[in-house]
Image 1 (cartoon, helix red, strand yellow):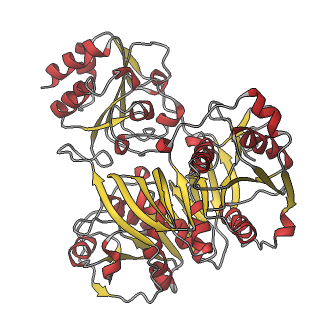
Image 2 (cartoon, chains in turn yellow, red):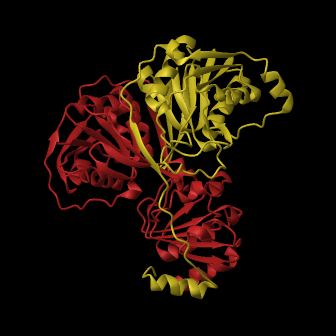
Image 3 (cartoon, helix red, strand yellow):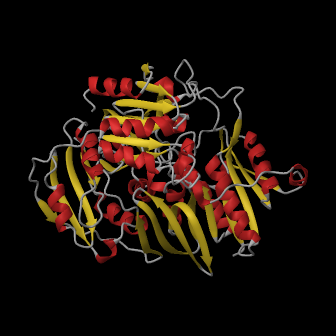
Length: 249
Length: 313
């Protein structure tokens, strides 16, 4: 295939202890480390491996949001993507709108595959890939842990609740990456320098002709109820006694 | 009044327990009329089980050879064909529901609400985000269907004292052939199912190997418990993926959860926050798991676990 499109979402880093703002308007992002959504990094790694095997010619990374996300696109370019598209908007973009944006880019770029992370670790929605596949009218292979390409088909193994499911899909299609699809490479310093010269297109969201549907309204963000720290026991006998006390043994 | 369609999850013969929990969520919307849709090659057996669920008005049986395997691309257009005058369409937040429901939502041109943990009113819902570090209240737009997945750990299954009518329904939809089922490798286990077990024993990276994980299985068997694992243990290859508990694995709510050699990353804790009692066994007394455990024991798991097994046998 000619092209693979990969989405890179800028999210609060995996290791940050997220805190809800006291006014309930959202979570604290000021001065917080931001990174590529970990599932998206896996998606990009898979696209790069497909290209390195000679099954694709170009890997294009896409981000949607404020221009801050260019940082994540540059990291994607340093990992090995060929070019980047920054869809710029200061508005909050929901999953359905993201899917419509990707669909608009699909119409422009005509990729053989779109690989996205299965979920973003900020809103934990797990929707955009499935929605894109629906709008595009193409197959979806979600929660992928193995992808094998064969001409105009792909065989994808999916992590499902009871184990591993394998499906065959016709291309073009959407694949969403699960944790064990691969281990993303580290970026090397010379690649970061090279990435600065790779093309990065900025497209205002309005230019894509995407119509937003009535979205969900976020009313309030609240901290979760905390579990209380319990008792410590000294040995197995103490543990067994405590469990018996609670009627659990 | 709310009219809710719940999409049944099943393996062709048995209704998945997640369906009764999705019904429970639907029933928490006051005055709701609830139907269940069963998409199968031959759904008779599953429909009979669905008809037992309390709060259900009727079961709609949609038989089609294409529904032999639960492929989202195949089922989604059929759900849309049935969507008609339903105000809500719910599925469980299982891998089946997570695969299917966003596809349904996009075909209906609405956003989807993921992981409902609490119903405020028929259009207002609470859901966890940021691995459970924040709870978001969202309102769905008026005049549009609410498509959502239900966080099953937040709900108790409805009872089975009903005898709702089963009607054969036709879903007039273009069914694509671009997605084909090849095979399902299901983990074989005689142990209680992780998602419904009342007791669960989980092991983490500290087990060190797949062989060492045997002491976890032995303890679980002595307790009649299901077995889970942290992401680290799955990534290290000690156990298969279907055992992962946490943000990106299974969200569970057993009466008793025993975390062994699991440090307690937030991504793991979000999968167990609704457990009745959490027991933590870890050699590191500073491990975050002890901040949320009800009973903690610091020590060498390779000594403690066999001893505990003998004590409960």
